[in-house]
Length: 283
Image (cartoon, rainbow, N blue to C red; front, side, top):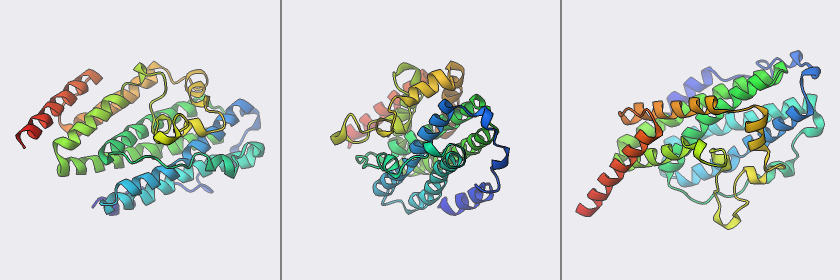
């Protein structure tokens, strides 16, 4: 069971919203209305950890260890939302998300294969870590810069925790897990080939609600994410390369195969798919 060790390690580095954020350092001259609006959108997006947790608990009923870890992940993700809302409450109160705006990003996700969902969120944490690091560089106001650095570090630790559950799943499921990890890894490391940013909050999750079945489609400004990434924080090719490299590096360690490119990972995916197909034929 991983939960006891993860609880202990994450407890040791957990930051306190009252004492570890330099609220008194706020400089109003360094925060624009445009920047404050992006903080609001990120606060609402982080609130979607609530339906994601409900999904994880539903789809992993047979895994008490992972479900217990959700108590940590859910707490810390909701704290990210709360920290940004507290920032707005103190310094831009008119932009604090309303309860109705938060409620809109809580909706049911369709059931999905647990291994694929786990991998998607592992990759999503890596991507979010880099988005927030880039956002911290874009902002000049010292308090929000500090908040983004804190939450980016949390996202990196969450990615590490998900990776440990992937390793555990690999031991239990063999090629089935390898196939799922490679399949989703190829998808999530191929963002430059897609029109929309590849993150769990930007993917369709409820067929009956389509096309309004992504978290981003339900925030007050559904087009904000692309504008934030492309035009505001300028998450460019150099940043995207870092994301892809981290995904490939971690999957290389996990799967004990060197992946220098998405193409390498895709070749591996095909290899595992063929092996699974051959096994199915024998059975």
